[in-house]
Image 1 (cartoon, rainbow, N blue to C red):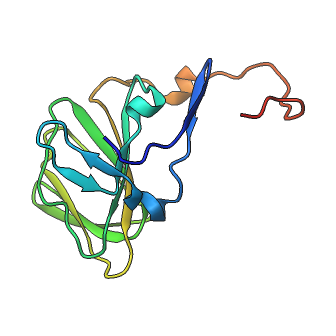
Image 2 (tube, one colour):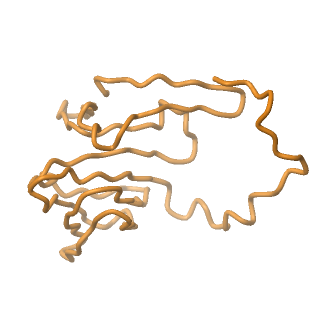
Length: 158
């Protein structure tokens, strides 16, 4: 899918990779399996990190460009987290500004698209997709403390 494949390191309970700087996301190219369309500046990490509960992608859109199509989903909501640049996002005909720090949630039925309004800087964002209604609890209800003193000494470096 991506022409560039970052290395992945794994342990019994983790996987880690480094995609590099967001300003260098254009090094990745995603090709859709169904249509063989290629999108520069897009990389998915679900398979790379063996994710089982969500899909995550990192994206960059060049200055003055627009995503060339609207899209919806069948089952997944999407959470867009904007990391750099400025642009506009459109859902069901409603347009609003986005930029570093903006977070947008879109229901599966929402017809969405975006564009980069900057003349000089990429618009960079990450998208987290997950099944609607699949996480009804709060994180605080799932997490719990481990009765163990934190130490960084003598730990294995990978």
